[in-house]
Length: 358
Image (cartoon, rainbow, N blue to C red):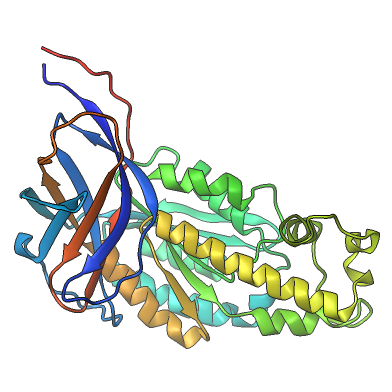
């Protein structure tokens, strides 16, 4: 019997050739290795957002381990069906945009292949799995018709429900697309709880990041007697105090209506800053992207780029030139030689294997 060993890699970057800058990755993946055989998956995208990507060959990639170039011994383009959870934020800040969200989501469905399966979830103060994974397009269209605006944002509960219900017993390629501003305000799950679960689930998170900060700011500044005012939730205030008020908060922080306007402005600004950072961390750690959306007319090109990226992945494998099984971290870098293209390593789930010897 051949030996099996578990290697760990710190994935520090995926770059493009010719000196073109690329957003760095800083994530730790554990990869199952058959003796000295290392296999990685790469998602490729166009830096300009073009949805029609060229097919790449093995000559278009270069793999480096601890700075030493490796010989790619196995290469394949993985054009496989995928399972996707579509998370739609229907909180108060998106109340007036539901119809446009439905239209763009329908157009996204038309970009997918018949064998791709989709689940539709909506979240506001509550989370609802409207339709579980299916490739029945008529059923998905009907699910989109059921979107209804609410108040509050249980974003992390929506991610948790995706992990627990949608993908619990699903194998193969998995992804989540979240249309949200990311400012979580309700629910039990937190960023700290859900991030490691996302990293270990082997799925990719894409975020269509809505720009609702000014909309929310205007409503937080209204008095609690004004129609349409927003209040900070207990969960939001607790998060703000924990992050920015190490000495503890004064008593009136327990009630959003007792806050001064300047305090409301600062809390809103900080919560959006934290949300943006958390969205980017989750996307990067799972091999995905954040697409800032200033207005909903930008959704179609973002959906198209995601659909193109999901369709095709590349699998590369090599035998490391460093044959030591010393348990040390290895730095892995992949370059795409074609100008204008960028890539990200797709997380690989590792399963601990007992070392055996014939």
